[in-house]
Length: 130
Ligand SMILES: [Zn+2]
Image (cartoon, rainbow, N blue to C red; front, side, top):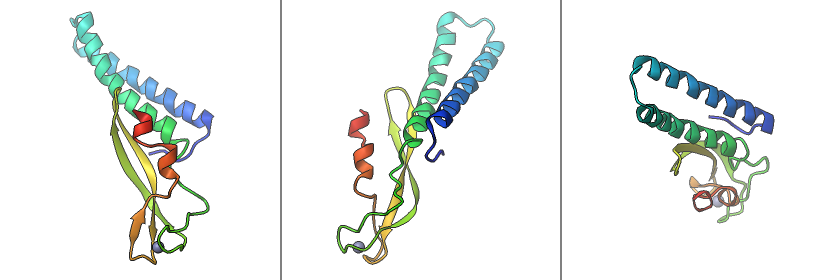
């Protein structure tokens, strides 16, 4: 899964996904030479869902995963939160399945109270992606 990337890096990753979409469609057609237009279209739609799901992850994750160089303070005790890692966040969208990732923080002082930093939900909330 991608971390933050420049716009050019995201473009390259997106274009690679599109290129990778072409090969399986060609191979599918090789194995189904008598397929009707509708059948080819159906296979293309299936592949498109994969492409769109991954493509949206490139665009969204490449911009912001909620990671902060200066971690927020724990809302309960005020101690700085510690970055633990990235957690997957799966969204079923109109165009496909997208696995986003969000930076995940804990407060060591509050017995492992876990939370995403405030603000990480503001950038990309499920509601804003609907
Ligand atoms: Zn705390």
